[in-house]
Image (cartoon, rainbow, N blue to C red; front, side, top):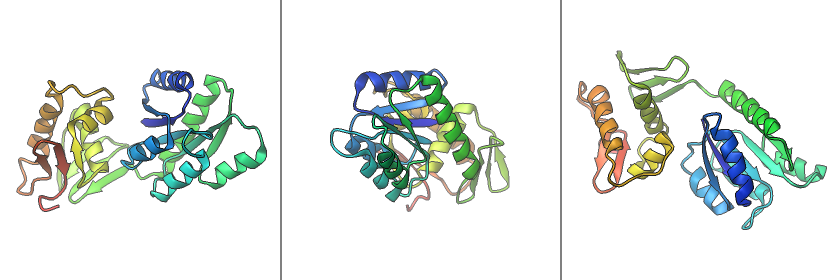
Length: 225
């Protein structure tokens, strides 16, 4: 599960991120609405934590913009304001829940877990692109009638590719989203795993789905996409 924390207070952002990372969530943090929209456009997050007051825009406007992108992931709004009107405005803008600052970490974690369970219940457990189908609940992958056996990390890599079809994905983005770490130019870990995935998913079939974009990274989809 990946979570985007949008909070302009560095100490609070770090504290929230650390608490969530200790529970094995992948966490990115940004301090402005602009940065949040840039990352949200990739639509790879399972939940958003939005501060109501940001330096460059109102969190309510940011929440509306995220929903306009077609993103359905749960949004938990963090606010230092206890007024009912602002909370209602936040919920009306598309937020699923709100939490008033200061808050206890245990309460934050409980809200996050509840929203993620709600999102998982409403989201299809299957990802499909062409003849490739991934069952997230059963942890299985098929291409046509053939079942493809993958390691846990190969499964995570394919899931990311399936969620971003026909997009050019850089090695740095893949490393950050799949491995949850910074990309090192001298590392070939992405290339190794892509090669393994190709061998299992592409090699036995005439139509190739994983394509190298020279100088950039990879794209998943039909060759003429």
